[in-house]
Image (cartoon, rainbow, N blue to C red; front, side, top):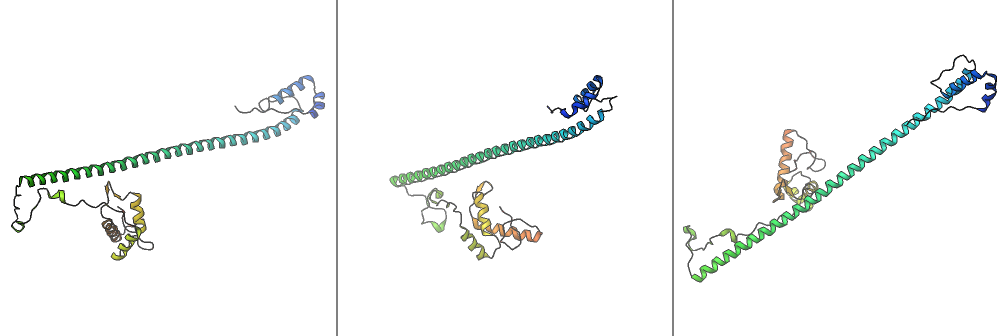
Amino acid sequence: MAKQFAPHIYRDWLPLFMTLPAEQAAEVLKGIAGFPDYEVNGVAMWEFFKSQLEKEYAAFAGRSEKARFSASARWENANAKNEMRNDATQCERIEENANVCKRIETHKTECDCIQENANAKNEMRNDANDFEKRNKEKTPPAPPKEENNKNIYTPSNINVCSPKAKNFIPPAVEEVRAYIAEKAYSVDADRFVDFYTAKGWMIGSNKMKDWKAAVRTWERDRQNAISAGTVVSFGVKSGSYAGGTPL
């Protein structure tokens, strides 16, 4: 609720009131109490009182405007703080969801590895049992179809004896830098390692298998960007053409 204007009545005005008839004095009091909405007529001395009241009213209006501006500023600051608080809460929730997703992905990867190891063990156990059974029965294996390999025994399931693919080991920056120097490429080794480290050395939804192939792809994309006149923001040594599309 807006504060109402409350004019002052000064003691110095008393002698002036005493010179006025009762009707005019009452009219002046009405004018003071109702200023600026009430206008006094027929009292010559009213102009003096009116000039004093106008000064007070101007000061009152200035204070009211200042108070209104301060209240508006406080309201805006409060809204800004609430928005910042909401943004911070939302960021915390997003980070929590990201952490949960990482834990789920890590758990899934571990489960896949366990399942793969279990399958490999079962295949090896079945192959060993089959070989032992044939050995007990003294049943000679069927000769191979290929004439050149007629004296070589080939197991029935050659994939069981095949070595498993090696797990991918992320390279160090020095390894990447040495390979780039060997091939005379212009890819930035530090940015290459930082880029795939941030992505967990993933290419799309698949784990990277050959980082050297990825370096060659970056260099090839850089050359294509140069030919097409395209400028890419990263993936190149400092000071050279900004080419090289990250995977």
